[in-house]
Amino acid sequence: MYVYKMKEKNNIVIIDYQLGNLFSVKHACLKAGLNPVITSNRNEINDANILILPGVGAFGDAMLNLQRLDLVNPIKDKIQSGTPFFGICLGLQLLFEESEEHGTNKGLGIFSGVIKKFDSTFRNNKVKVPHVGWNTIYSKNVNGWVNTPLQGVNENAFMYFVHSYYALPDNESDILSFTNYEGYEFCSSVKKNNVHAFQFHPEKSGTCGLNIYENLKLFYHDTK
Image (cartoon, rainbow, N blue to C red; front, side, top):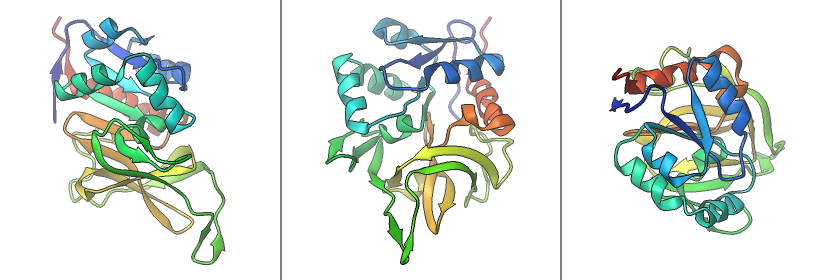
């Protein structure tokens, strides 16, 4: 597990790129005893000890906003530096190489793989798209979710989803949890070194989701 020493207590930044469920994420952080700031200011992002990239909306629009706000390189630099980084919903998808949403759009490329749409027909059955509502997450790792933000979350715990697209990582070792939707088994969270991201919305997932925000405390030491 990567542990990043904080310069200031609870120096957590929620990245504002004008597409995201910012205030519900901030509220969940506050409820978990954290003290986040919402910002698109590069200096504040550079000084952050923990970064959260939330998001709802279209992949291409999100990448255009990140580019327009000149946040792509600061995000990549912070990830490269080992700063704990957490993506939520669209924030997970943006971490991949590209998305098939409305044509091909390039992402941040932190994870190798693509973002694909649920097929509206699967195994000769109609599949409702988007995938909306409560569904379970599970692990295939013998060690489960120890030393991850999902530590303490039970296998097959219910989380809240709202999405039409899902991540297809090239490396199964990057997958933290799986979910089954109408026969589709898809990746519902990922992890790679200091980066963790969730297709579901922890801030909308009740006690189990709040546990994930509380686990952010595992990723830093209070130096004061």
